[in-house]
Image 1 (spheres, rainbow, N blue to C red):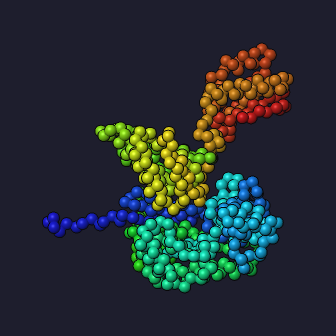
Image 2 (image 1 turned 45 degrees about the horizontal axis):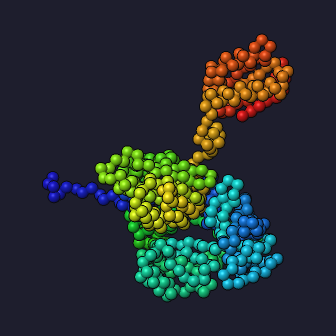
Image 3 (image 1 turned 90 degrees about the horizontal axis):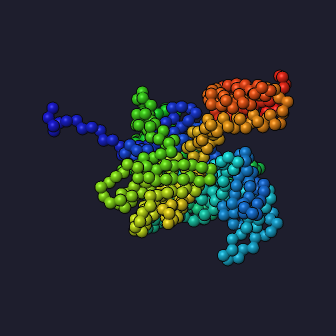
Length: 525
């Protein structure tokens, strides 16, 4: 065959959305850009996700110190509603909710913010939406600024005007979208935010989305009037629909689904909101697993590691604690021929891009401290700051970034919406309690010896001491502390017996003092 007639390889799509729904207990959605995992969403049947749900609830308690109210929404722990998330003067939605009885009527003066006790009263009815999942002993985060997303628009009843997404920065496009929205019939009391997807949508598609949102809000109002709180009024869509609504953009080349029911669901949703895009949705029919075929599984496993490698040979270490996330950037084996300052700048810029990707994929929120490599030149520090601002401006979560400190540390906060992939995949280690450390053999042995002396001081009449350890710890202790045990036993001392127990976890111990066969006291560590 001549060169001119060689068959060309099919072009690899630049951006692909993969929907893995072949197992009933878990659904995963991955977005690949040129083969690299760019977005990941996981939803499990065992985890009842409530972010995005809208409730009619009641105020249970008002905390003046926190300037917050705790609201009963009928979903386990009470929700946390801060004063800044309350529509002034008393939560809004008049004509839908009963009029509140306030102990202190609001004193509205220019420039003064109302306090929580001026806005809300005990047992007051509220329209609230969950914006953050509860974590540990904390209940879910709430807001009264309800928003219901469509494909091209976001309905915000409390807004009362039409706005354009901040992610659309081109002023000409913003003006064009506002002019288009003025041609549609939008009730004055309703607010709408135009999403980025609307830039490529037709007028008919936007009208269809608008009609759907207006109909949905009308149904919510009727339900709220006819039911007593606490009650769920609106449940956020499942992961398949949510992912298609939020992440399917015009530059997505292909959507691949590996389960027939999810494929039908995806096809119907896309056909309804964007018929021209429906042909991109395909059913995966190969025998090998979808995520294996597209080499996604290995990339997901890398997210569970502390270390994330950079293209130039550098790396960063990500440590999550209960209070914050600490990230340390290192040059690693990066030894460019160019000057040290330029090499450090390039490593830091690579780390900035990878940091945004890792926080997004791991769904990390809260306070993040990043220890970049120190740079001597002020212009390089400014370049890094500008790069961080530009990269994180594309993040769907709200991100605030402080200037680089004199020590090269960047403080930033990222909106927490979910529990994070680590909390979903892993349980806290019962041995180390989440510290990542286990007692050394020497430390454990010394603790055992101190515990033996303690029980003997408490019960000097004991003639039998039983030390219970894990099998491995029992062998190590018997070998390394044999002489000390013999000294304690002596001529008239108690008999000390080391008993291995496979149920006992490594690093744990139990010391039992007995008289004949009667148990006198027990110490556990």
